[in-house]
Image 1 (cartoon, rainbow, N blue to C red):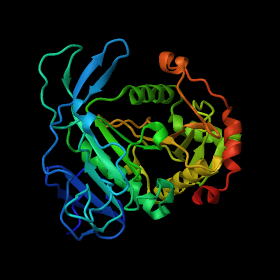
Image 2: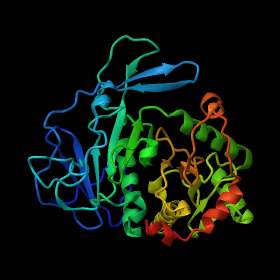
Image 3: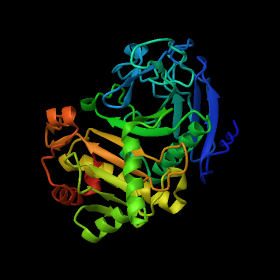
Length: 378
């Protein structure tokens, strides 16, 4: 099949090949590759029937945020046996998975059990300003290798992932109903992962979630006071200090921020302030990919185990140009020492005030001492 045309709002990414399909249950899937995509079998779906998704939002008046309700998610796939991997390409038509056999590097499809949907029906009257859970939930399968990790992707493949995240953001923005897009990966059963195949998710909201709204407000206040983006000052200060920078690749760098909430929390930031992945140049995106891979390998090599973590990609809201918003990736590793998990305590869950066992300067020094090759061997 020929490459699908990018939507009008997308920034064409060199080397990005994409092909769009529709599953038997009506969900959309896009296959991406470093070379033209070729499918060698039928487009599958675990079931030909769509899930009756009726997500709902209710307003929390004291926290000032929406809470998602999606009762249909109770029946989603949970730690299936290795012989049934719904994220692997289908090999037996009698037992279809989510993806077809063929030549492609990444895949994105609509989540079968979404917490938000562009087709969410009106729930009618309800408590706490009940309304339809409008948005989108997508699954991003990083590779066809079920045994691999995000860290195992070659740099060109990691670069492709960044382009795919940019493309999905543009496509979702083009619906005219999305104001914020969050790309993320949960890794490890310790943080609740129910499918081991390397994958992430995308949540697209019809509003600006509280974390992004607060980031935007703080960044705008800094820009108004100092006349320049917060990220420009952050990069300059961290380069000058040196002690918290883990890797500086010129156009991008990894830093344990001086205000880290998790013991080995690491940020990947572009050296030039931008708000969206699509705004990175080819050289900047390649450096961003290289630093992300390096960070993931160091985290795995730190204690000699595959580090459980949450990775979040923070991009500017889509409701208008926000030049002050700092594009960056935040990585929250959940091991604070060998065999010791970081659990949220009362002050963190009850008050939103984090307590960290390790100074960022010490954590950065320990990460710099890890050879990425140590993580690659795991």
